[in-house]
Amino acid sequence: MPVESSTLEEALVNGIDLSTNAFMLIHGWTACPLLMEFAARCVKLLEPGGKTAEELAKDADMKVGPLAIALRTCSVLGYLSFEPSTREYTLVKGSELNELVAVLGPEAPTAQVLRKIYADAAPPFRLPSAQASVCLEVWAEQRPRWHTSISRALSILLDGVVLAPLLTSIAYFARWDDAGLDFGQDSMTEHLDFTQMGAAARDILGGIVKELNIGTMGASGTVVLTSKGSLALQRCYSYFVPTSYSPLLSRF
Picture 1 (tube, rainbow, N blue to C red):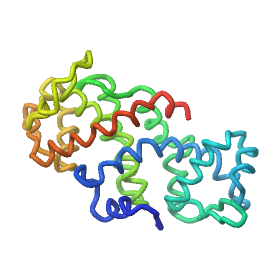
Picture 2: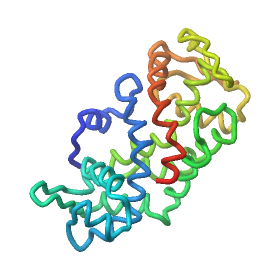
Picture 3: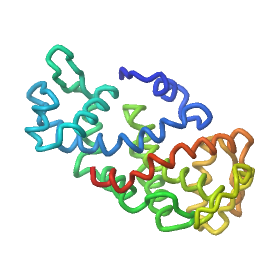
C-alpha cells in the first residue's frame, strides 16, 4: 500500500517501538473514527465513480469539513486516490478496501467493540477498573481478527485504539494521583504495580508489555520496566491531549 509517512513506513517494517514511533498508536486512536465513518457512509457512494468532497458531503448528508479530513486520511492510507485537477476522490478498489469495510463497516463486530472503547473507556483510568477491562477484553478477543490483516497499516492503527487509552492511563497514574497531584517526572520508576488486577487481566497486560518491549511482568503483577521502557512510557505523556477528545470521537 502506498503511504506518505516515513514513520508509518518504518512501523510497517519494524513494528511499534515506543522509543521511536509512539505517535503511530495515537494516530490510530484519532484515525479510527474517520475510517469507520468512511466505511459506513462513503464507500458505497463512491463506487460508481469519483466525487469531490463537496459532492460527497451533499450525497452523504455530512459536514464537508470533517468529511474532508476523513478523505485525506483515507487517501494517505491508500484507500482513495485524489486527482488535483478535478479535486475528486476515487476508490482504490481491491482486497485492502474490502477488508476495511469488513472490519470497520457498521455491522462489523470489531467496529462495534471499538466504538465501545471511545464511549466507555475514556482515559485516564486506574488498572484495574471497568474501563481497563473494556480495553483488555477487546485486545484479547478482537485483536486476533485485525492482527493478521492484509493491511499492516490498518493492524497498527487499530492496535492504537486499544493501546492509547491504556498507555495514557498507565503513564498518568505513574506520575499523578486521582486529584491531579504531580509527584514529579522522577516518579516514573522502574516498577509498576498491577497486583490488584485479576490473573486473566494481568496475563493480557503482561503480553502487551512484552510485545511493546518495555519490560516484564512477574507472576504477582509487578512490571519491571527496562531503562528504555521507562523513557518510552514517558513519551506517552504526549497522548494526554489527543485521548482527551474521547467524547468527541465517540460521536464523530
